[in-house]
Image (cartoon, rainbow, N blue to C red):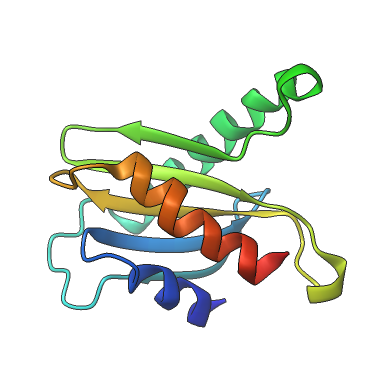
Length: 128
């Protein structure tokens, strides 16, 4: 999983963090961009933010019967963008259902396109 997180971080210079966590909030791997010195959250705050992202993603599951499973959620903050993407269970690769969390620099011109056009295809190729 560490290799996967590093692969995600290499997709774009505006990516600050990539981490894979289980749906119960346990991190399987987490990596920051090489040389990043402005870490915004303490480890405890980061764990809380991860749980909050998972809760928001799970809340969106209530509409999956009509809309389908949620795939991606992006939140814009004043200092950073955060994105959470569902990684679906894949028995052939022994991956339990989990999520990819990334943080993106606030000056990224189009975090939505970065997530949808660059990150999601890598997630799908890796875990499908």
